[in-house]
Length: 221
Image 1 (cartoon, rainbow, N blue to C red):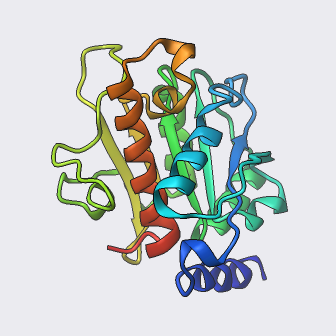
Image 2 (image 1 turned 90 degrees about the vertical axis):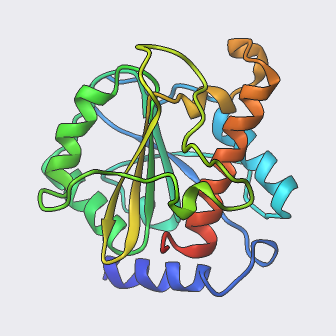
């Protein structure tokens, strides 16, 4: 039943434009001790930017939603972040898997320190589907804005290049994992991290591309 609902929901999104529907996004709440609540101004700022640039109608109220809750099926796009440990129970994995296979989308942004914890959980989530790095010509980098070199580098941590990984099932990107970029930090109020305006704008533009690719194209190339 959840699968059917999700499939109908995402198909309906593909038939309307941004200006005709009201979208509501959420941030994923998970167990394990990681700070799922990090970057409180990030997603609201991204929504305001997207509403202005795309004439979108996304609700600026962004709730937390438990990974095991049936409420996740009411959101077409869920954002996840944090610095520390992540633990999904068996039931939570099943719930999240059903959500993603039914048309939902999860964007995970490593806020530095999440990588070693989230990768094993994603392997449990989709044991037969590997995380693959998205090439620079992937359409997610070429929506309203072009990022010819892939993800922008917002914050330096270990001197590594930013990478975008995805899980693709039946031709649809169901999950995006952004690593060594700190998009969420870049979306936050500039006063939080004192980022240059160029970094703030680059993060917002890449975030808008992600929303546009997911909400208007359903994650399909």
